[in-house]
Length: 235
Image (cartoon, rainbow, N blue to C red; front, side):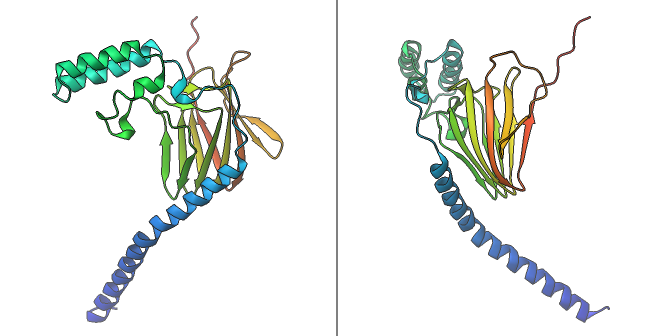
């Protein structure tokens, strides 16, 4: 088939593809919003009562490493003119007298966008509906964390995280979605599904090492664990 008739059909197909893409662009955000609301309701229904006696993320004690990280951001802000010398001195004074992570977090809120903040104290659920969501960097992992992935992927990076408890429980709902977990050395990950427990980390851990327990309710879902490279033994 050649000539005007073929060109007309080709153009018609292109119009159909454009129409489908435009419709997807209009309904996909709404579908994501509805999916996230359903995921939050599902997680809330499964969420156990909060454990008493555990401090909230903003109440945890700050380390010297956390203070130095904030200090570097303040100094950079002064160097490029975002903070005056007086403001720098004032914030550094607050920094080195601060005791909790919450006090440190307030010092950089007006200097960096949310995704670049040096401390993430959000302990809410992680939800990915038709998209990818990540939580990593210097963040506080609550004792119980809800994760939902529907036609999307959630990534949790524990390599620089602060564990609120020695045993972390992740309640994961996976519907054609995935959960990817990055761990440092010495952190064990197990998966519990239908009363069956499987160890997901391959490298050995010390007795009493912290454990991440992933409890899954899934339909065609997948859990992956990324471990650091094995260290070569010295001869």
